[in-house]
Image (cartoon, rainbow, N blue to C red; front, side):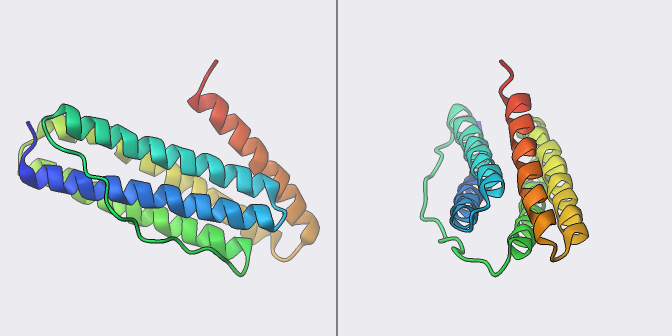
Length: 172
């Protein structure tokens, strides 16, 4: 059984994961309109992953005697000056999500809810991976600079990253 405090904190995280999905969907739309098909595909995949993270939380809350709440979402940004700016926002957003997950883990310690603490360890590991991926992408973007040929190759490269990640997540 979840305490009301933990249920509330988990519901806050559900909203954050939903907003993350919407943010990445908006980024995908922007990239697609810019002709950056690989980046768009990467962002569509990220959006789907964030929605799956949200649903995992929803199921957990409901199965543990709580009531998962679907709330209003903050509208995401819809335009970017550059694809670098977009990926900088992605990285900063992942840092924000990691901080939120860490605060949630702290609450589970305070309340001695070790079942929820154990459940959240998957999210802690996931955020380490998400931050590393975003940082790696930013490092590549900084190497490219303003080179249009480099942008073309990066767009193709990130499309491969999406295909590889998709296979790893959904092995056949």
